[in-house]
Image (cartoon, rainbow, N blue to C red):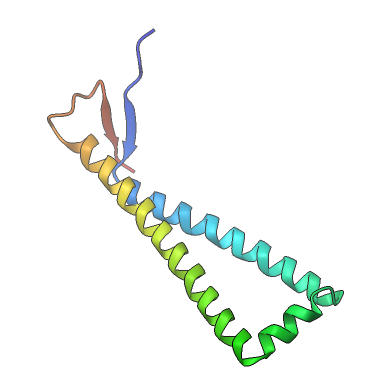
Amino acid sequence: MADEPIVVSANAGLIDGLQSAGRYAVVLIGFTTAVLGLLKVHDIAGMIALIQSNGGQVLAAVSGLIALGTAAYGVFKSKKRGTQIATVAANPVVPDAVATIKES
């Protein structure tokens, strides 16, 4: 059984970055929907009181920045790895039996 070559899009970095951003958007939308649902039925009144206090505002801001930073780093790493694999596949030293570029 012969192994098939890896076919890589020339835009692998952009595609991987967009897919990663899409996954984060789905998680954010799901989280927002869940929180709004909890707020609607008043299950997290204590959490709301904490967030409304001064310490809670700082905590909310810090956790929001950490979440945004994590998402940005994930998108960056996905784009970087996709670009790296496209660069390797485009290298003339790499045999076409191992990896090839598919122009989009």
